[in-house]
Image 1 (cartoon, rainbow, N blue to C red):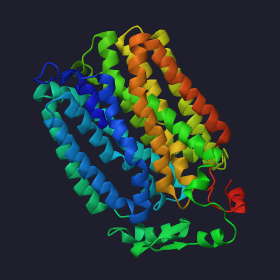
Image 2 (image 1 turned 45 degrees about the vertical axis):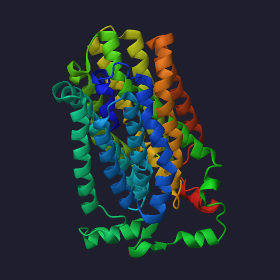
Image 3 (image 1 turned 30 degrees about the vertical axis):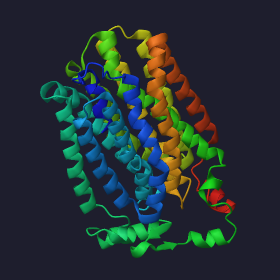
Image 4 (image 1 turned 120 degrees about the vertical axis):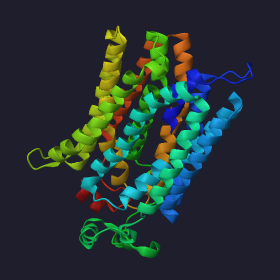
Length: 421
């Protein structure tokens, strides 16, 4: 839903001439709200289950979108956008908690890619569609339409989702037996669990809580990668309409193809490339470990995106060339769900919601600070400086994840960690 805002920025006008829209502040409004509910969402998912948390988050998001459409001043729009971020904050940690209960380790990379594919498909649709709808029916009505669609999706989600395999009304006995055999922690109805790790913890697993995990360098390697990813991708998603308008004189309503191509590439890589490539790397023929796969996808993702953004600054003379290099950058960014994002589910067996909440809080700080930093840099030093900062952050994260990451559950005894490696 955040993708609706950027294409509408140039169309938002209020009847009061004194109510002007500050682009940097409005783009930072969503992340400000978003980061405030990460920890709460992750904690709630671990406590009461992710299904109801996700239903509530999407329903409240629909309400916030409708309120954005009713805003009569820039101040109201700012705070309604903050409220939209508050409502959507729990979605990432609860999604990680949800997937961790359903998926064996070797399938988490593909699942994380599919989860992110939904974001890419949404961006692929929302960026060009929002600009076109805004120009046709107005920015207020556009917000209202997206709010209605969110409410419909919340209902569909609640009907077909389940916190655990045992509670799913359409799972087959064969599928349920497979999951019981492959998952190390198998939730059952009523909130109990068939948890063989309780024995491990009683036999010497120390510091299995979230505070102990936060002392591990591998955890901060994930957080740093998530921070860099958000800074880079949020920059591309939020500032692309402004960049095309400023540099190439193309308005959001005319830039549908330019907005769509990078997200089409991103979606294609997640849906078609990442899964088979992950399976190939893990195959006996190649012999990558799970940790090697996570590092490959994260490091290559950051390096490829950096090459795309640097090439855009150095070689782009036309709008289509700009689109080509944005497409390269977003295509490589599609590797990350199979890298550090899947890694959230590897490093803990007992606190996936809370850990994801902390990590996404750190990452969302980049989404909040990014628009403000970009706005100041762009106004004072120009676009090349903006791209240089983005690339520098990406390269630093690639180095840290390549050196410090792990694919082992860090809330396990040391002998279990060595075995997992």
